[in-house]
Length: 97
Image (tube, rainbow, N blue to C red; front, side, top):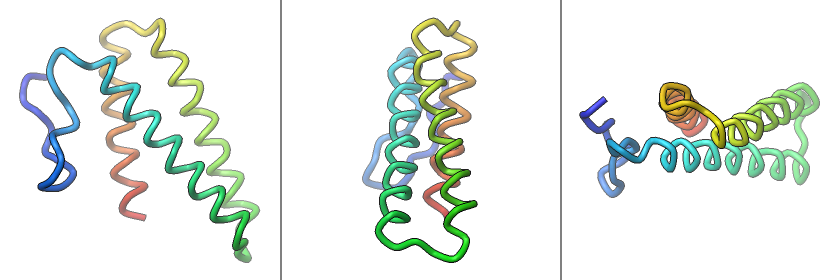
C-alpha cells in the first residue's frame, strides 16, 4: 500500500504512512482501546437500560484489542498491516456511533 489513506479530517495527517506500519498499528489499536475505556467510564457514570449487554460487548472488544496490541510485538509485516487496517476501520466505526 503506497497511497495514504484519506485523513480522518482536514486537520489531521493520513492514518497510513508507508514504512511505519508497526507504529501506526500500535497507535490505532491504542486509540480504539482508549475509546472503549472512555465509553466504559461513561457507562459507569450513567448506566442505561441496556447497559449490561452493551458494556459487556465493549469490554470484550477492548480485551480483544489489548490482545492484538500484544500480538503486534511478534506479528509479521502482513499481520501488522492487517491489524492496522482493521483498527483504522473500527476507529472510524466507533467515531460514527
